Length: 130
Image 1 (spheres, rainbow, N blue to C red):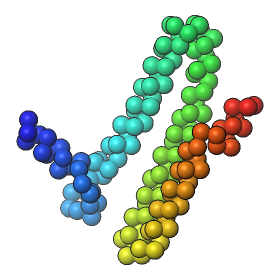
Image 2 (image 1 turned 90 degrees about the vertical axis):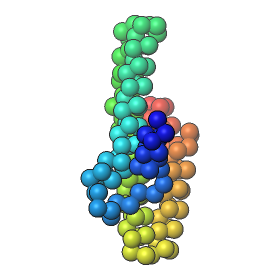
Image 3 (image 1 turned 120 degrees about the horizontal axis):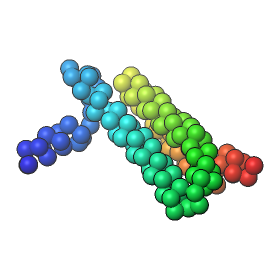
Image 4 (image 1 turned 135 degrees about the horizontal axis):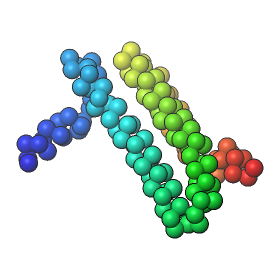
């Protein structure tokens, strides 16, 4: 058991060097959390629909919850894409040795996450009010 835990920490813990000789394995380790997060979000949405259908109010409640799924999946996909894009820009700047550009990119990514992560963001308020 300790051996398996040590191997898990070695693979998933610490920094990941994508320039290592095991590129395919490193890409799997890099994308696995993103895939797991998306899968868990889809499972949560499906569980929400099942609970609403059986305990909420039947078919009309189920349809109301189901109608929001494309919007929610679009927003989740958009923000995951923005995060991956920011990661690419930061990695390119670090790889080129441009510390100032990397710091600006990190600050921009943090600012975007604060603006879009707020509960009362303008785009959510507009879509919910209409």
